[in-house]
Length: 159
Image (cartoon, rainbow, N blue to C red; front, top):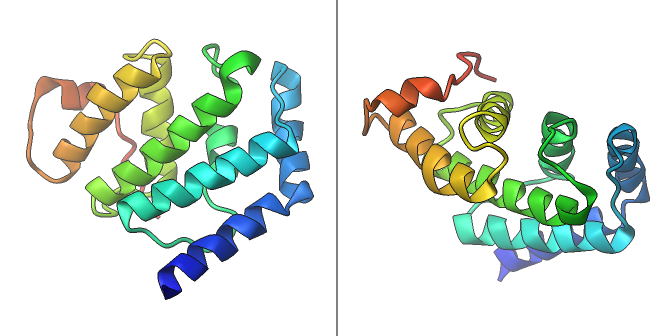
């Protein structure tokens, strides 16, 4: 029950953050990308669900701002699917962090996700999730030495 209280408090913190919304929209404006407060609430709900699904607890506003910074200038992001894309990227991020047992820093994971999204995945979130991130998790756990692993070009830096 205490875990649920933490999740709900985190959700409320994110939903009630017009400052975060302004920062996200400032990053997206040059690329024609923006979010509404409703979009931010939906992303907050998605975050809470992803954290619950992965058994993670996170304090603060979460990874969303870093995801936006990493992906906002991708040629594959469009306003029509922006909120959905951010929700899926957020889910993928938390799942991959759990599956890699924290062996990859946030910035390295985001860099690998972006490189794969714009490269191997060609902007396909399905391909990114089903193929690239699955392989990344396998490689980080030492379960695979497949040639595709080298194509992920995972940055060596750790936080």
